Length: 214
Image: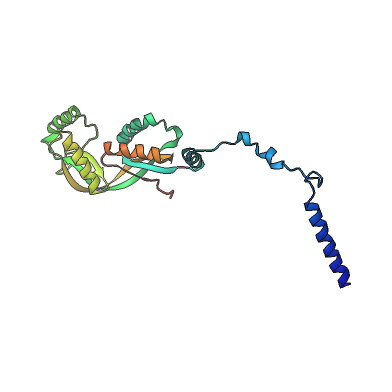
């Protein structure tokens, strides 16, 4: 029995060796199946730049948000973004924030003094202001912005000084304010670079990743 088993193995090995010596067509095989499938005349070698572009195209970009703005500031920022033609990739997120700092002009001698200062601000192109009318020592003061951080408030103050606004001060003032963040979805590296270039035009703002949904 063992001898028969060994004989069968030897016969199979002999048959395998014999078939290897045959022409592929005699074995019923097509020697060029891959040549017809690959179609080498249609192959194209990609440059490194093309490879990078194709790999980047398959990945979604980041979600970046820029802010925070008042409603009027957000409108100006959206105008600055208009040349980028973002379409539905641009959206607003509104957020109630606690402001701890403000930039203001102290009372200027009642309603008439406040109006004179407003006229000066308009002549300088300053459109973001609010006249305080509540009773108290700050009545007729003019708010030029409220901010979450001292750094943002100082940036606003320096911007006003550069615009020849005189007499503005920095102070602490806790208040709840509604702010706007502009969100840009699918932002690739080139778009993020454009946003970073625009940000300095709005000194009290920052560019960051989109806040997670709460």
